[in-house]
Image 1: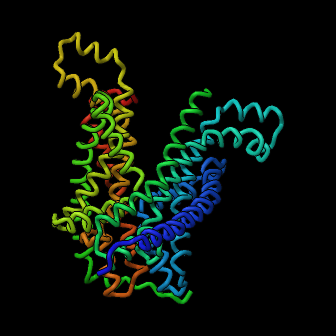
Image 2: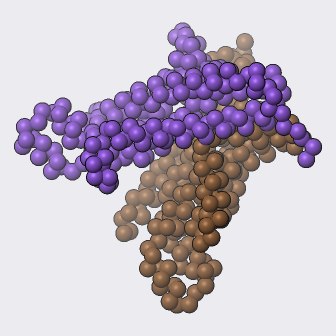
Image 3: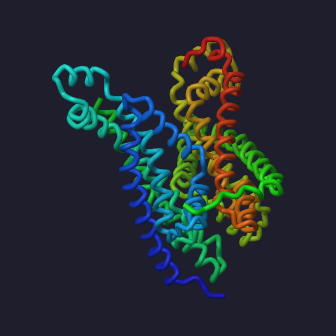
Length: 215
Length: 227
């Protein structure tokens, strides 16, 4: 048995970079797909609305763990063998998109009707209405809850450990296997997660307070 | 695509899935009930308590909400056992889920309790209600009615998150899936089935919480309007 030492700490901190990278992939991917979903949800075509809403219901009703298993083991057996980071990035993207899509739909719908009517009167087409009138106003509303959701993304990257991707949680398990001091190690791991997430939580709260004050 | 789906293993293994789903239901119902109790008490302390009570409750809530459930489960199961407190996987799972649920419920219930106006408390005083009566009938029930949609979403999220307890070999639905797929090599089919079961469970839970809401909130049942 090896004593817990500074090298283990460095190893954990290095693994935390993979947690950050995976969070970034999930956030960027989730934003692109999520924006499309949000716009689909407020579309004038019923089929488009239904498709987006069906997707969101499906993802929000299934555990992220199962989505991970499906994209890693499931696709692997079908012949599409993905490396862990791709499988994890894909699953987290699909997952984040469903939640971000729903958050942003709310922000788009929160823009007052009169803004739509005024831009109609000015003769703007649908694209111009979104680009110049509606979306700039919803972005302002969307920032606090989006930052809040980033906390969820960072925490959920811990599940990528189950398909063997060595991020912070998996690194904690690996260190534990050689030193066998689970309480200390997982407390350190939790502390690193806390250090990543708490600033985001604080930022979300501060942004929310500011946006309320502006009203 | 040359892949052929084969669900034939279900004929033999379906009792495993039923048993796994049943354990998931048991784990989550117990965790939701206890988590709601912990969260309600903490929320009351956070709103009405003095500074020395508010600070530790706030610390607990922030600590839990900013760390992953997976790590919390590891600390309870592996961590506590290395300190000499040996717990079974199921008990560890319930403890971790309750601690986790409690923190989220505290925040939700706090929002509800803070929405109760001061004048309501003064009115309750004038009517001669005892402190306990005021808390139950004037504060908690109306507070809960206001935040009930958020609460029930959180409960469903907890049910889905309980899949993570498979990592400490609590034999619930996801662990059952892992077992069956390692026996049959039919991982795609197995996880599709389990995904469908989870979807069905979340629909079922939503319906259940809606029914409970009808029983709990007489005012809403009669008027059908939001508070």
